[in-house]
Length: 59
Image (tube, rainbow, N blue to C red; front, side, top):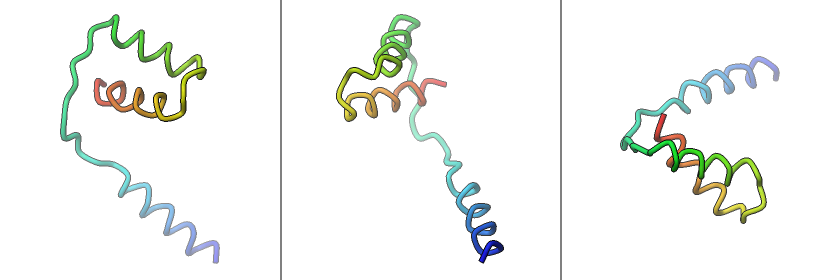
């Protein structure tokens, strides 16, 4: 059973790496605004999740 989970984890780890479709260029001000929105955690979960997307694409 453990061997199966080990193999499954290896497969999932390799599948999760995807090529970027879009590149996003954000100014420092925009990056800071997204970072503060995510860090405070006081916004709706949907808003925080959507704030992660351009921030991750920016890297």
